[in-house]
Amino acid sequence: MTQQHPFHELLPLQAVSLRRRALKLTSNPHRAEDLVQTTLLKAWSSRDSFRPETNLRAWLFTILRNTFFSEIRKFRREVEDVDGLRAEALFEEPRQEHAVALNELLAVIARLPHDQRRPLVLMGVLGFSQLQAAQACGCTVGTIKSRVSRSRAALERLMTQDDMMRLNRVPHTGVTLQGSTIPPAYIAAKMNEPASVD
Image (tube, rainbow, N blue to C red; front, top):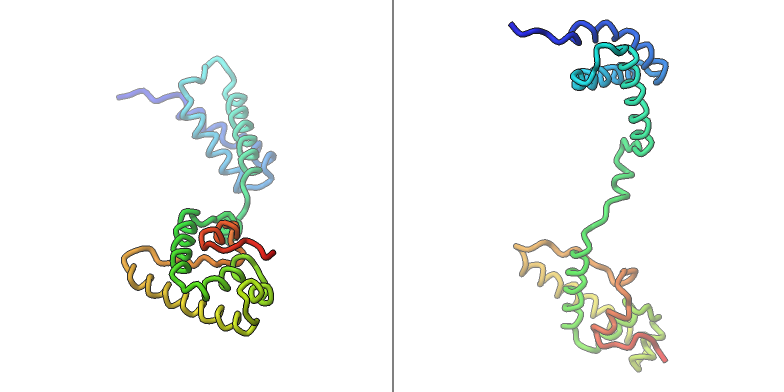
């Protein structure tokens, strides 16, 4: 028969005083009980390092106090996020998907006829007004409105066709031109358009 470690008898005797001390530290009965359980587990796992000639209660109180302070430091860094809103705010979509989607969009824009592509890039990417785009293209504002409308419809049609052809690939993520993080000059250079009106 194996001999039991003296902690089998000594630790339960200290539980009441540990609970009292933990309750004073935490002011919360549930946290106090958790703290006592953690302290007893740590003491049990370190039972070989305990020297019998030392005071067991003082040793346990030291473990309890250190565990309490460690938990306080841990709780300071933690943020309560019951509904998950804070975690959602930290979410960031993978950047490579945006780069792939932008390249696909640029390829589709490049397939548009020049008279439809130029007003779309001038207004959608470079932020020109209808009047500025009309001056840059040498036509009236009504013609620019018509060209932009046709180019958007053609762009949507081409992108839908491309998506249908890539059913086995990841679906299109839909990068918008306005408000893009890609510099407008980069997109304009890809489309061979001037970056500003002189």
